[in-house]
Length: 360
Image (tube, rainbow, N blue to C red; front, side):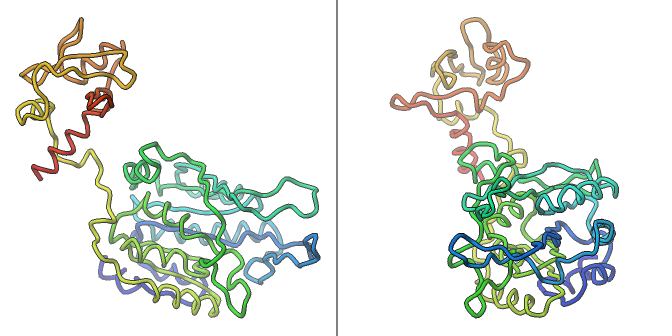
């Protein structure tokens, strides 16, 4: 199977995505990112207050006769995606209010399992020039697995690290694509709906691994391929417009080959070698009698020589004592207990990471 799909990888294929996906091997793709037509043509020309014309999406690829024809098209390409996606693969679809609700309903009808809807908040959206509606300041991404019980990839630690140690939320504040990143041709936008690399970086980093195959059936200006190459993933791009194929190919060729691949993966803490708390005592990272505190210094406990700790009323592991002092059913002692270092509290997990680095 790997050899079959490798024939297609790191290529942009010119043609209709529904036809081309029918030729790809079943259960061969790790992740799909799709930015399908929005079907959002302006009914008539729109001008800014300075009389400059607003460039809408007027290309033929974004035009459909009716909602039913759009739904038929959506069901066809999503069915192809479902066939080529691995059982533990995932799909991202981005859209606006014009199409995303219809797509979501069809996803569920086909058996995909929605994991999150992510709101892409634009800090520099196009204003509403007519003053008849709210400014459209966001788009919606639907992230889903192939089945309800799929063992999909979610790089939780990478997302937490990207967000300065906090859990990544489902509302992403990312600027629209502009400035040097915006691809131009003859002084104009080369593609009307080019997505920012930061958006693809977050989606790809969160739900794929180094070496995974990522398919984009509406490749456009090639942002998915650019980011996939930067993150050492393989890509397959499908695009019906020759002009866009040439633009995307040029962008990807300009991306240098990946250097140290080890920098592109964030290991899951669950996959790291286990370090018992007692090892910190044995190795001299903590001395018996050292006092540990919670983050707000409301609770304290002393370290014992056998690797247990003792509070005023309970003795046990760092997890058991942490749960006891909080009257909680469970506790992650590595995150709960802190060490006072020159007046500043440091989680004992930092000592665990230091010891793990020494041992491995």
